[in-house]
Image (cartoon, rainbow, N blue to C red; front, side, top):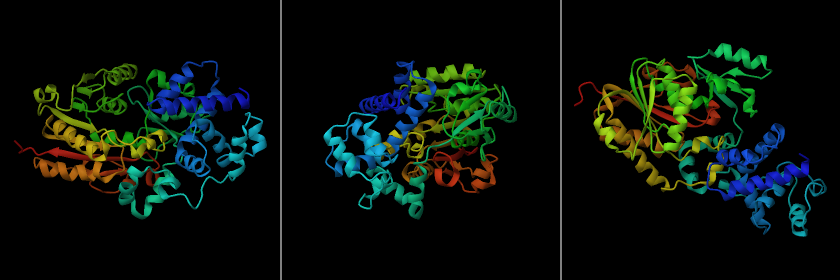
Length: 426
């Protein structure tokens, strides 16, 4: 593609992302499938530019509003070329036919200086208003640093499937391809590649030797401690990222049930299990968090993972489009839903069994607040300290629950707590 054609494609892609109420990865995947003539290099450059625009959406919108210009996708892209990439008007004009109003807009923008002292805190840190107070309360003096870390593009983390290969073997393969792969510092089966790359360079994805999974997500699955021969439930399985990790922990022995309310996601989960050579799992479509299947299987599982629906504030560096989507139920409504899901899933745990509650949120009400409320309402359960729950790196400390953040750990933001049903509980 010529630079001008690439710019036009970027504006078209951003328009589709802003028009469709779907996650950006789903939109881009469909957009490129319909345009297979776009080569890998151009595709990578377009995605990189798109994500940069999404990470600076509030700042670009602030500048456009300040200068009285409509925040259209085209205006955002042109403003980014000036503010984010430091290109001058003449260089931009060689890529696009500028109108007089666009020239005036660009002339009023400072090249390469997207920040401005008049920006409110929520704009400067790209933190939406609905999340500002909860995250400030959560991080205190570290708030600015955590928000800055959430704007840094993440690396590509992989999890090795131990039933098909080993971390050392996959590491050698990746390095032989000239890829700068390194073991993840915290997760025992993780590998890390800097930045984005064409997934076609990773043949292990097709053979099931590796899966794409953030190191933080890998650690949450590790905390479940799903053992060979156990009976395990992944209560909110989605497309099965953690389900795959649990099945591998179980070494294809025992019984794993992946539950969800979305049939399409469960179908994807089943396909991924087959590809990974994992045969000890089944999928279960639920009608709600209180589906009758739960009552019928009360107290019959050794491990239950509840990766609860949440605000997703811990995934902003990976999913920058999520910043612009406030929870449909509101934060209070979402917290209430999480509590109902946790209480219902707890019924599946046998005496002596464990329940793991996790979110990819950094907001206390969804995390520590849920733990306190659950314990108060369920005296048959106790919190299992991390050191007792699983073998974890010393760098994670000896806290009773797991909290991971982009600034402190270089992972997505995650929270997890491990509960155990007392053996003397009725």
